[in-house]
Amino acid sequence: MTHPTRPMTARSLLLALLITFIWGVNFVVIKWSVADTSPLLVAALRFLVAALPAVFFIPRPAVPARILWGYGLAVGVVQFGLLYLAIQLGMSAGMGSLLMQTQAFFTALLAARVFGERIQPWQAAGMTLAFVGMGVIGAAAGHDVPLVPLLITLVAALGWAGSNLIVRSAGNVNVFSLVIWSALIPPIPLTLLAGFTAGWDEIARSVTHASWPFWAAIVFMAVFNTVLGFGVWSKLIQMHGAARVAPLSLLVPVFGMLASAVAFQEGFPPGKVIGALLVATGLLLHVFGQRAWKRRAVPVPRSS
Image 1 (cartoon, rainbow, N blue to C red):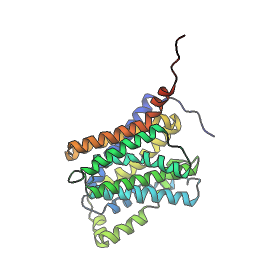
Image 2: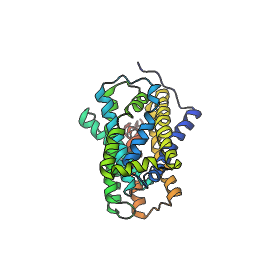
Image 3: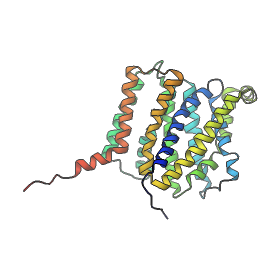
């Protein structure tokens, strides 16, 4: 049974802005945390702290094991494991926060393939603009936008889109409960991958000799970004509906790029700016284009 939603209040809007700010700043925290250790280990620790001890207080979601495992692997290993790797390899925090939003396009494309959903004209136009923008960014690949991290980031966004479809197939699931319990799954494969790629001695050194700011970053990513972020966001969607709340996530790359510029003095050469603007415009058209399209389609009455 679905409950009626109500318009956004000032308190809810401020909470939504706070969460998008946390999610945007999180990209800076990620870049800082992976500077001197395996990014896969950082991702593993983030999900481990997010899961424990929360799973002892949050009921297990009423979903089959394949949904729980599929969501955990899509989000933990593909989305965040690859995102952390891309950022360590040179993807800037600001550009990463923007390119991850291409999950909206990948979600629409996958939904069309898997569920037979029709891609609307404004969505196609938005995708076209965004992919042109990514092409511009890719053409400018070099010191500012390395090509390999760019491609890894897009695959991470594809993992995010895959997790969206898993949630969709799960039906009326408690998303917050799903996030907490699925966080138990990524630490094992991520730690194994970290050990095989960086060496077990390096993994042990990273854990035993990590400074308190490193652990503070892990707690921030796990508690504020994952547990608090998804918990509050899910509650806001339940109260006010996805149509009112979800578009506010477009503020994440705004906060991410501003935070990156402040923290790392990230530069914005012309090619990067043009590409970013095209991607952002495509995202806006993808999310809000239906309104303009409907107004365009309404026939204007002729005077008699």
